[in-house]
Image 1 (cartoon, rainbow, N blue to C red):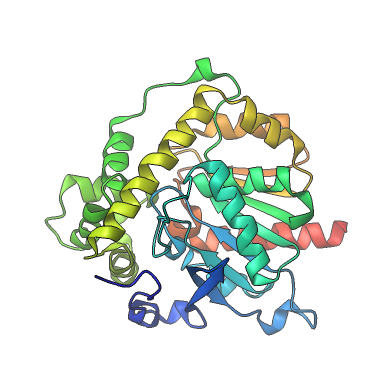
Image 2 (image 1 turned 90 degrees about the horizontal axis):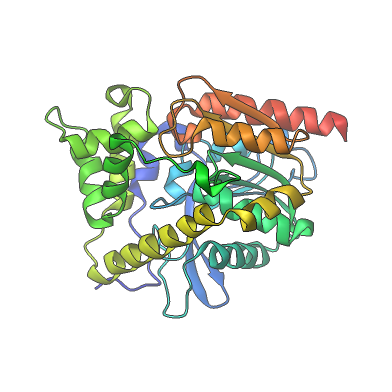
Length: 326
């Protein structure tokens, strides 16, 4: 059995030149070892080192979901992508609530452990929901928000619609962490099964065009032979999913947070996102006209992974605009 404090093999990070400068570390958060991927601030961040950036993954994901943008984002300041409890390679402990609220408290403790009084927080899917609640509860800790397909509910719960078949296939795949990594690995084969294609199709516009090194890296990071770790991931996914579902049944808690966020906010989404409908993001942007938003044609659920250059373009342009306005 793998020790909870040990780090997984990170040889995959060196498999692609695009990830040069990224390293894996264990961060001590109140005595708990937390797996992070990080990159130091680049020279272009300026003499002050720029603003720290914390990247928060979505449901069933890990810090590796940000691998394509960690090194480039370091041009604006130091970057840390974190594994939430029960996901990736941060082990859950018995008292972890593993809910949206619990993840908010955990992310605040990560900021404390890093010694960052304030940071720009990037969040994808559930991570965007967590980042929004963090900014609403602790405005002094969040300098800016970058939300990528955040898992926001419609303002009215009656607007819920049944998920599509591809969405259900992808959710089933993500709901079985021990199988999910195998499906990612299988997706590199010509005879990739429908489950693997469905999972990749939630993220990538053209799954067949994804670099093999990226698929292999995602699979390597997802696979685990440790039964306890697989159980952790299953519990985290189940409990976090129920927590998100509650916010969709009663969206008032999340919409209060959306309306109370003080930090400048960028929202990025896609018209082809099967998990977060574009109409929900447009509803949020209508309620917060001070936020900057881009709902991009034919883009899916994880722009930073599927079209990283596009993500970096939008984020970089918004950062420059925000600095000029300041």
